[in-house]
Length: 166
Image 1 (cartoon, rainbow, N blue to C red):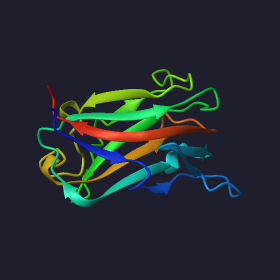
Image 2 (cartoon, rainbow, N blue to C red):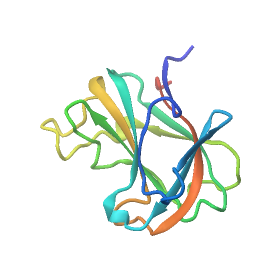
Image 3 (cartoon, rainbow, N blue to C red):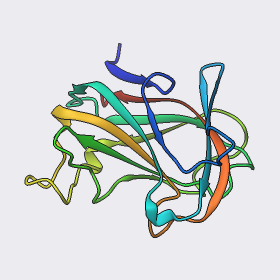
Image 4 (tube, rainbow, N blue to C red):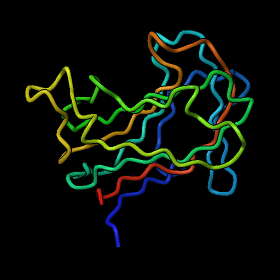
């Protein structure tokens, strides 16, 4: 049996996504969490933050996966995913990216997996890498940064998970 750390989206996130004033931006149905997004300025780096109650040791659990559902209402959706250690260092040199072309928009749950060992570089860490023994947050940026687009729509998150590499 593989060792894994699962984060149920419903239980542990703070939303920092620009949402419509009359829409709270989040709804839960059948274990999935709906994220409504309205990105007017991608340079503001709109994001969802999963903050752990306790610092997590991810050493040996370097396969990161995220389950999400998107459809044609997921207009111009792209995601950039970063980890943050307890010292505030993020893997910002080569974050995990799900481009608009990679996200399947067929209203079906899909799992996207990354090997963290290829994505540890940090511009703010003295060791040039985040500390996998002391991870405190997962950040999911929606249509953020220079490559981001002005867009609005919605998608559904189920979970993020860390597993041991096989």
